[in-house]
Image (cartoon, rainbow, N blue to C red; front, side, top):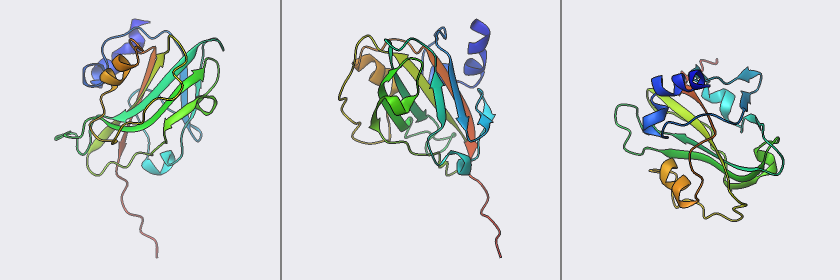
Length: 172
């Protein structure tokens, strides 16, 4: 199982966003037909709508999903780290975020400059969370602090992808 964490170390997801953890729940992410794997490239135009995301686990277990960009506004000066793109709580195991309660609506990647990492972190809840207060702003979100405030513990799954601004289309 430790081998599945290696790309998270190499991509500095562990360190910048989450602490070292042992994955214990399966999470699959697709943007259209593109299967998202750690470190892969996804074009912003492919990710304007929420991904098809499925988690394993039992239906009596609940999960929280957080998606952030730790490289906002630019990887060399991430002064808005982390920019939160999506928060869903109370997702039953064996289902997807549509079965949970969306706290912060999905916002697709829009990297202004450089290659940004987009990180989806899954936590197992100890109990139903119900109504969770929406962050006052998407900028300067802190996944660790959020998890700590809700007593979520360490992640049980994490997937990240890279994304960069697409060149302007040349239509005539």
